[in-house]
Length: 150
Ligand code: GTA
Image 1 (cartoon, helix red, strand yellow):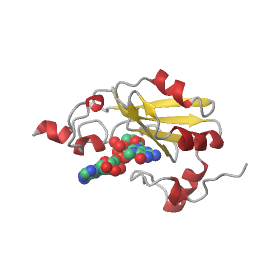
Image 2 (cartoon, rainbow, N blue to C red):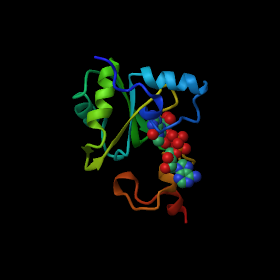
Image 3 (cartoon, rainbow, N blue to C red):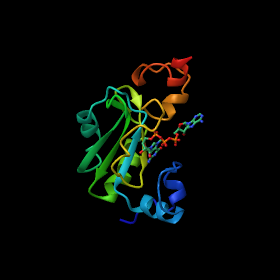
Image 4 (cartoon, rainbow, N blue to C red):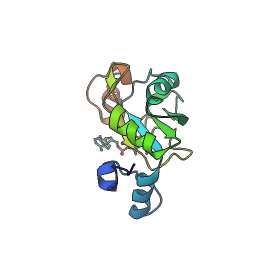
């Protein structure tokens, strides 16, 4: 069946600042990759729970949990590599917005996992978004890191 996702601009609003190629190369990778990114996860969600939910969209080749670069503990995101593009698309279509550990997770297309991408890029070690958060989110370490420092 022909892919429903053919316009890279509609695939993902996220642009990875650390992607080293051109915009065309980024779009090409996004259109063909079998990797997805999962965001808004609880720090307490395990790889086993991720596997159990995401295997519903298709056979999984590998899961890489996102980790705090200082504490080496889960920091609320992961990458999932499927064997087929169709399964990755189904994962975005059907699993994004569903609840995992009481949280609506966000499933996004990704240009492809590379060593190093599993680490949070925030200055405190976790994800950048958790530095700027002003709400209290018990599943993600309480207040945002900047608020905690105040
Ligand atoms: N495919 O949506 C995504 C995505 N995100 C958010 C992160 N990754 C993603 N991949 C896909 N789709 O490998 C990947 C990254 C990296 C890993 C950890 O996850 O490619 P990170 O989240 O720590 O850092 O990445 P990243 O992605 O470089 O953060 P970015 O894009 O600067 O900021 C994310 C969000 O933080 C923004 O959308 C915004 O909500 C908030 N934010 C950033 N800067 C500010 C600021 N100055 N003020 C307020 N809010 C801010």
